[in-house]
Image 1: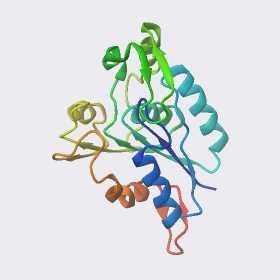
Image 2: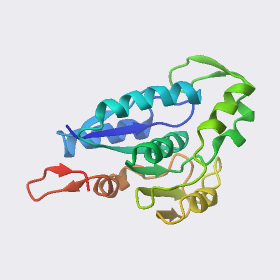
Image 3: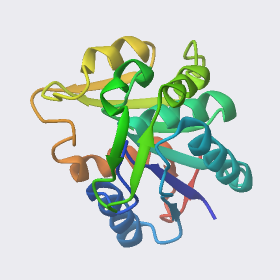
Length: 200
């Protein structure tokens, strides 16, 4: 079964609005596509161990990726390592530099789980940050200029050589995300005349 792996943002969960919109859209339009959205821990090393295990179990047939915010960073790590295709939504670029505000005790927005971020946890993000984007053509990036959390221009620079769609206005959650799902799906998968799908 072809699989879509959705990666949510930092301190979010599999029950985030965009994750659920994606899950329901796929179920309605392409029920033969498997949907996986793991609850990602807020620590780089733990998150990547989990994601590596999922990808390595699902590489045949291949999988497509959607990553939102920090999920876009983790998706980038996977795309570079496994040569996958992915769609990034307002992705975090080299996020270690912006995590200082999270130092100390935190609570997950959705689940209420409590966790603590320490300085050495931030260093883990630096260690896995790809030094260069090598998989040209593997990315479709959507950003909105109204994002007040991340600077969309960082993504424009980071993913030069790939298709980057810059939308005016919006916000960090990416307004009207569900209206982009058809384009996202067609980038990740090829739809045949019999309404079956395959990887490009």
